[in-house]
Image (cartoon, rainbow, N blue to C red):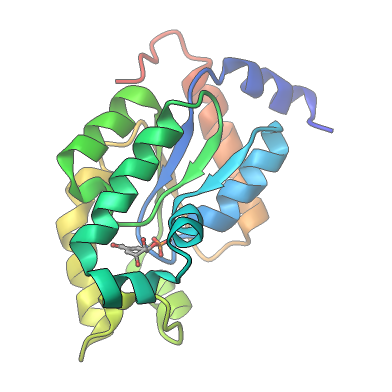
Length: 190
Ligand code: S3P
């Protein structure tokens, strides 16, 4: 049962809350917790794309290539943003297409889960499910990706910095920031 604070925040949510940030930032895990706390539907974009394709993300990249994956990503985002309030966790590269970034900025509350590179690397180094990191120097690749994407993540309405804390602490912090942002008179959401 949501607490009073959660209920007040829920009432202020009139559009999707979209989590963006690098792979390994915890968008799916924190997104699920946020959805439960606010009693909102949860959508994991990568999961939906995998379900539709009937194959995993590495298989989609391997069979059809990144551009086709990006097409599916853009279509899935458009569909989800038409559905009213929910929590949406995106794949880290969704902001690469400017149409996606504009759509997120104009049609949702864009939340950047911002984790430092060492934490991202710690979580990703033994994980083989990220095709973009299947390179000779995956840590270097990760750093480069962050470097080129940062300017897009920085356009988020809400900036939630993450250290090495548990997802529950990230959630509590995020709820505080969201409450301040959405209950402020000046939040326009664009
Ligand atoms: C990608 C991130 C992945 C997934 C795909 C591409 C990226 O999602 O969409 O491997 O470009 O950063 P997560 O951010 O959930 O790992």
